[in-house]
Image (cartoon, rainbow, N blue to C red; front, side, top):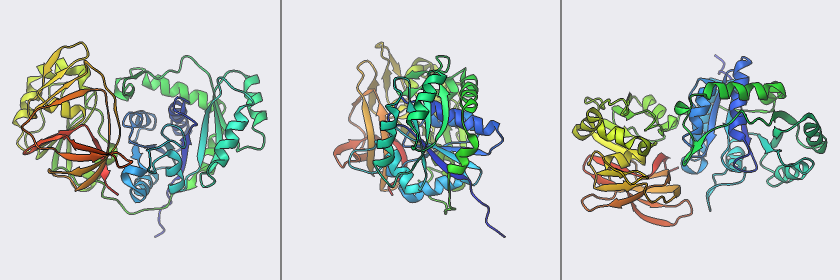
Length: 430
């Protein structure tokens, strides 16, 4: 029996953050789906918000592809799994095309080169015309192993503006599409990035508007023609499951769980039991592990503190309890809101967290496990604005380094079966 053909893949990148690549990606995903194509998506890097928007646009889970955290073989395996169910897989890049972790591979360009995927470059044209040619010239020649196969012109103001841009790009990679500037297509944001997909009441209208704008001036069939064939790959074990039956918090306060991890745990035979702390649901007491992922518990701290079924269920849970970032805060003794109000949390770890004084903590983390149900070496990412007061009484969960190898010392806490840290674990170290 012949092996089923996988879909083709392409990367959507930009010269810089803020160029509109997420909006263009959403428009392309929905436009291709509306045209009858089977489409799947992926997000480069550790982002946990954009994948929710992708899933809304395609109706299917989006996975992260993180070259630094996962390694090339795991990225290939995850890409192949997406491609097994698609005609085309669109991978949205992160930051600018060549931006990545200090001293380590991990940029969108690195990922595209490693996976052999061509790039469509999204350019914010709102404040330029003929200069676009110099920009494209530099991006297409800076790294010969990175194939910029097409250009997408974003925030184009008029027909005349579009004609000037296209004339300037004669001899450059082809212009695949154009999206006109529109004040009505806006993606709201907050301190960790975009507002989560499940919180955006106008999301469906936003995606359809982006799709309509993209469809008007985009050669959709050209997308698949440009895309590279994705070869089949063996499955990858990304991270051993926390247990056989895992209760996972999932709602607007706890929305930052990685789809690739949960799917990997399911394929390993684990049962995922979602529950909503905001709805005052308790974790399934018959589960042998409880996972409180990150999210925005600080926006719902008073409500969470008052939800007695949830808090009692966490305190009485007898299996492994693991929280990361927002989940770690909830396992602590108290969480202080930006306005100075303190809310009592589960009290399972000797930790006080506060948003009264904001301080950004951001970057990749190489994690060495000091205990718990984890591999000895893992990769993760830290991104939060809270400050923490760690009290005595717990052992460190990890020791941490940056991607460049800078020692950050102990990270997180562990008391017996209860543990947590600010790091979002992505995968076992490659």
